[in-house]
Each structure stands twice: as structure tokens, then as C-alpha cells.
Amino acid sequence: MKEYQQTYRKNFSLVIIFLILITAALGGALFLAYKLTSKYVENEFASQKIEVLEETIKPYNDFFQNKIPEISFYQGFLDSAQAAKYIDKIFTKFNFVDRVVFYDAAISNQTIPDGIRVNNFSLGPKAVYQFARNLDQDSIVLFKKNQTSSTFVLKTGDEFNKMAIKFSGFIESADTTRALSDSDRFNVFYSIMSQRITYMNIPRREELKIYKDLMKTQQKFSPFYELDMFSFYLNPLKLKIKNTRPELYQSITIKQLVYESLENNSDIISNDLPLSGPFSDYKLYFSSSKSFLQKEINTRFMPIAGGLFISYFILVLIAYLIFRNLNINSKLFKLQYDFINNLTHEFKTPVSVIKIAGNNIRSASTLSDKERLHYGKILDEEADKLNDLMNKLLSFTQIENKAIKINPENINLEIFCQNLIDSYQLKYPIFDISCAIEGVEYFKSDPVLLGSIFQNLIDNAYKYSRPENKILKISIVKVKKQLVLKFSDHGIGIPAKDINNIFKKFFRVQNEYNQQGSVGLGLAFCKELVKFMSGSIAVVSVVGKGSEFTIELPYDI
Image (cartoon, rainbow, N blue to C red; front, top):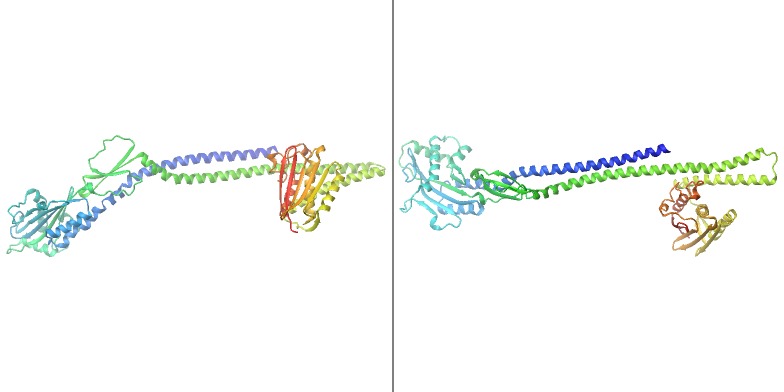
């Protein structure tokens, strides 16, 4: 027995060690998950800025790739009114375009004032207009041919001259037998400077051949061919910043490329990403406080922590179930051990008495009638004890396995109770038993099973009462569709801590009345009988004053 208990103690310690290990693992997992989540958020802070940049410059890309090339659709035939309509659409859609200068130019082999001339090729402006939001009408025309008050100043003509020289150089060496490549289109007809894009409309291949012939050969004066050029002045500070990751970036601004924050605040995390093209002198500047990012870290960490805690509680539940099963097994082992000891004692006592009586009979040469009756009574009583014990064990097993059937009969309750009372008073003359029946005469049930319930509860009342208080009052009353049986004794009572266990198999209340052995099946057998008969049993007890068992059985008559 000691060895068995030590084994269970080791099992319990293993459960405790398991709980300690999974708790430590939970702590480690939470720490590691938090660190990894923090690192992941920091990495996203550094990497997701590209997504913000792409969304922010998407309008510019649309302007550069789609809106500017529309100029070539007009093939140089835009006048100031048409150019104004085109530019109004740009101002409406693209807020970052501050000002547009429109060069209405001409190409010919004739000399064009204020233009450039390469061999026989001339390219010069006919008029220059500027457009801006809320611009006075007087400021629109910067230069117009044949107006004496208008001069093509260097500031106005610088950008035009650069594009004209580049275009003339291209015409000089152009291969007019093939279509323009994307590289030619970009290098010749675009000029991208800081905060400015200049674009010249792209002539058709036939026109390029004409321009090359004008440059290379002597011809009669040609007509003036139209060519349009636009300079778009852009303001990067008017780009609309689209913060696609507001959970990461608390503040996003556009700063000059050389900008460095003068704040020496260790709580601020910052990063930047340079813009490109005409905005290359500027950058997107990202900043967030650590407390701001901490909210995002916590938001992402909580589901992970929740999953870890769920896993932890599942493991704790498993540990608890293992511990409970070990505890139940330990208690079951103790109950079985006590049951075997008590059952052995219960069998051993009658067997010993029978053996002694048998030896006395065998060793006696003659027996008087008194001796014969005495030994016969002893043998009969002890045999009855053994038979009763065996029947109880067998009946209990049959009931648990539902191997018996109820054989109902109409029982006259008064006769039934009186027969039991008479038999017990013959057996125990000092036992005061009374029965009160109210509102019912017959009860349809199995008399054998009902008798077993009565016998167990009467035996308990007698056994667990002091000699001067061996009193039992039985009451039977019909309440609605239930037959209520109450067994009230003046016994020693049942401690509150044992009330929930007295109907369990092999359980015995530890007191002086159980020192000489008890199998612990009486009340358990009684409960199984009541349950088998579709009833219920309950007990109310006060230590030192007695107990009252209440049984409710369905009344079918």
C-alpha cells in the first residue's frame, strides 16, 4: 500500500512539473512573440513607405504618362484658346501643376526672328503664353510676333532654345526610314528639370522627312509648319499625400532632400524616401512616436497572445484532467483497498464463528438439546450474514448492469411496513420504529426492491444510533404524482464534508461505528435501487441530532 501511494505522489509531482514547464513556456513564448511583433512592425515602418510613395505620386504618373502626351494629338495646331482649355483641365485635375508656359512655334527654311537656324532649318516662336491659377489677363502673353511692345527675353526663351537646339540636332542625324524609338521620344521631346517638365509635340515621320530635307537641301521658301511646346512648372509641396498605412505612419510630409530634423527626440522614429523626376530635390519624410507604434504592436500582439493563452489553458485543462484522473484512481484504489479489507473481515468473522461452532460440535461426544439449538442458531445466523452480503454484492452488480427487471405488484403499504417493523423489533427489541401513512393505501412497485430500500435505511438507522437513541420514524405520503418516503432517525448524524460522498461505492464515514468493518455499499446500493426505479434520494443531516433520508418514487396508480 505504501509503495502504491508513493507512485501516485510521483505522478502528482510530474503534473506540477508539467504545469511549471508550460507556464515557463508561455512566458517565453509571450516574450518572444512580443519581440518578433515589435521587430515586424519596425520592418514594416521601413518597408511600407514605398507603397505610400507609389500612391502619392500616382496622380503625377498619370499626368506624365497620359496627360502630357495628349499634346501630340493636336500636331502643333493649338492656338492660345485651345491651349487654355487644355491647361484648365490640367489645373482642375492636377493640383501640383502651378504654372504652364505655352510656346506656339513654327518651322521653316525661312529665317524666323528670335529662333535658331541650322543650315536651312529655322525653328522659332510665334507667341509665348503663360497660364496659372488666378493670373491677371495682362500677364498671359509673354511674347507675340509682330507686336512691337513684345520681346523674346532670355528668361522666356532659355527653355525654348534648349529644346530647339536638341530637336535640330535630332533632325540633322535622324533616320526617317524607321519609326521613333521610345528612347528618342523621351530624350528629344522631353526635358525634365527640377520642378519643371518641358514637352514638345512629336511630329509624324512624314513631317520629320520634310524637316530633314529643309535642313539638308536648298529649296524655295517653304510654308511655316506648326509646332507646340509646353513647360509645366510643378510644386511638389502640393502633391496630395496618401497615407495608405495610417497605423504605421503618424505623420508624412514632403521636405527638401537636404532636410534634417533639428529635434533630438529619442521618442520619434523617422525615415525618408526621395522623390524622382522633377521632384528629385524633395523627399517624403515619415515620422511616428514610439507610443504611436506601440499601439499597433499591441493590436497585432493581442491575437497572438490570445492564441498562446488558449493553448496554455488547453494544456492546463489536460493537466487538470490528468490530475483529476490520478486523484480519482488514487481514491478508487483506497476505496477498493478498504473494500477488500472490510469484505475480508465481513467474510472472515462469520466463517470463523461457523468454524468454531463446527469444531465444538465435532469435538463434543454428546450434545444436549440446549447446546444443539444454540450451535444451530449460531450457524444459521452466520450463514444468513454471508448470504445477505453475497446477495447485496450480486444485486448491486445486476442493477448497475441493468440485468434485473422490475416486477410490479400492488403493495398494501400498511401491511408491508408493519411486517418490516415486526421483524426488526423481534431482532432488535430496543429499536423503536414507527410508520405513518397519509393519503395513500396501495403502491404499485416491486416489493423485493422496495423492501431492499427499506432494509438498508433501517439497518443504517439502527447501526449509526447510540443505544439510548435507537429511534426511527418512517412517513409515507403522496404528493401530486410522487410517493414521498421519509426516514428520520436520532443517530449520530453525517458531517457536512461527507454528505456528497455517502452515496458513493465503498465510501465509509470515519467514526467509531465503522471501526469494526463496513463494506460501504449500503447507501450506494440504496441510491442505485431508487435510480433504477426512476426515483430520487436526498439526505439532510445534523451531527449529533440525526439524519433524514427523503425518497421520491413515481406513483402510477
